[in-house]
Amino acid sequence: ATVAPGDHLHIKGNTVQNIQESGYVLTSSVVVQGPPSPVVPVVHVIGPSVISPPGTTVATCIINTILQTGSGGRPVQYTWTINHTDGSTVSSPLSIFVGNSSTSSLVIPTTLFESGKTYIVGVVVTNFFHFNSSSSLQIFASPVFVP
Image (cartoon, rainbow, N blue to C red; front, side, top):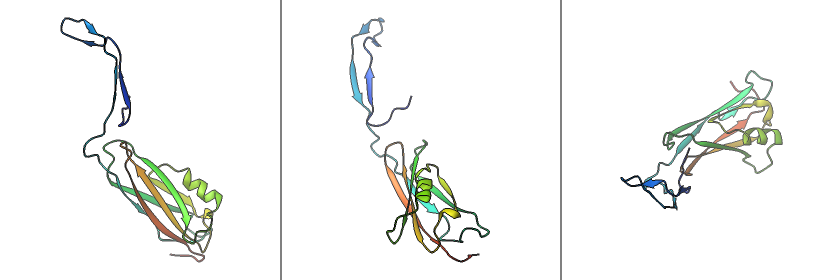
């Protein structure tokens, strides 16, 4: 079982015993406290700053994260977002694709990007202690081929 800070531990009655093997009637509940100095995640996003338009030699845009610290040896949660820098609405297929991703990297088909638009791809990494870190990357979807 996994026990996290904020969880309640319930001690079952007659389970605490002394040397003579007689049980104590003890029913109690305690709230699990976090560590005095919890680890905080530090994440960085890496990927291209410019991508070629769909139909060229590059079919995907690969974006990765580097988690420097903060997992505490446990799995972390990745939450991805994508926005246009001009405030306009990102196409549904692209925003759904990115929003449904929960891994440390994204492999986005370039056909989902709109040529000539600039995007901000962001990630929030949350660890076991519910501490988080965020990072983002700006990507321009070029209307012309970029080597």
